[in-house]
Amino acid sequence: MLMQPLDSYRLLLFANLSMALGVLLLLLGIAGAYVVDDQLQLGAVVASHALVILGPTALKIGYVMRLLAQRQLALVD
Image 1 (tube, rainbow, N blue to C red):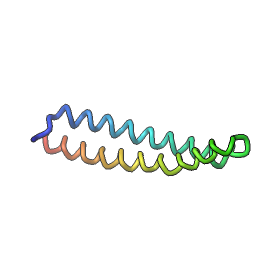
Image 2: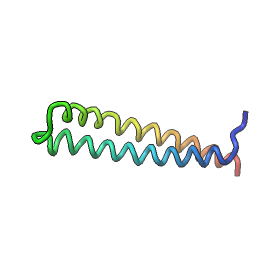
Image 3: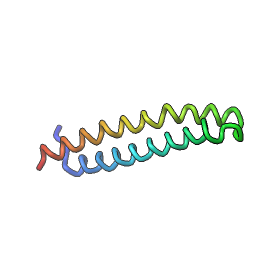
Image 4: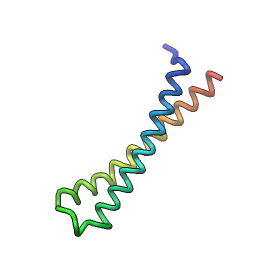
């Protein structure tokens, strides 16, 4: 089944949002895990360390989705 151009634009939008969210999660994780770790409870520090892993993961998945959407848009145009 061929995708409609609107689906590619929607995928591109979702990819950009995923990349922005990944960067935000990474920055929050770094701030919580390394900058203000002495002011946080242990659970919050552990969650911050998890964000240091999950942030770049979301960024990479968003980047791959962006590449896919751009390729689909190039094939449609």
